[in-house]
Image 1 (cartoon, one colour):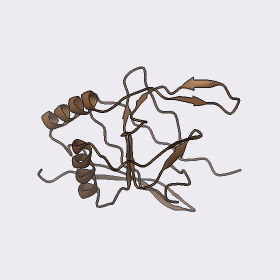
Image 2 (cartoon, rainbow, N blue to C red; image 1 turned 30 degrees about the vertical axis):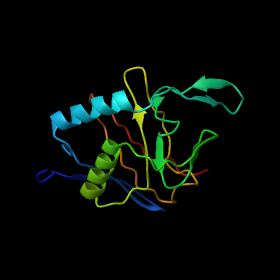
Image 3 (cartoon, rainbow, N blue to C red; image 1 turned 90 degrees about the vertical axis):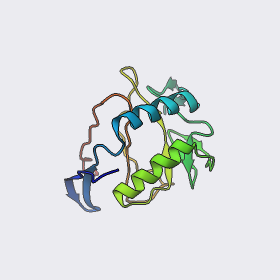
Image 4 (tube, helix red, strand yellow; image 1 turned 180 degrees about the vertical axis):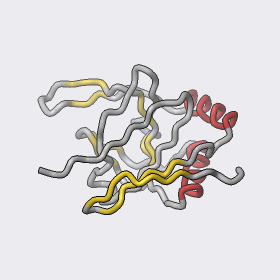
Length: 160
């Protein structure tokens, strides 16, 4: 891997500090990224998770997730939408490789990984990665393989 062009963008300044986006295009060469995507697509246990709304009504998440073991790869259990994923130390070898590449390129340590599979029918709604089981000021890495997609960010409104 040669020198990477890193793009740093400050999104906002707030009471908890500076929110920034660091974009690292070309972390994997195109052919390697395509091969990695097809291997993970074939070898990870993708499924569509069902959650309960506050009203008690069941709904399917609008994406495929590697939810059940070995899907949440982390040091601590992870809870969102009233569901908890236990830790799993059995990382797929390609996920270990991607995790290491992201840590090296970003100069940050990441303690977990969740895999989502999206296409034109799948999405992730606006959310905050601020679950109590994680840290108070998390650094989130998003690694995208496959087709190009929109990755939108927005500043959180101040608490009322």
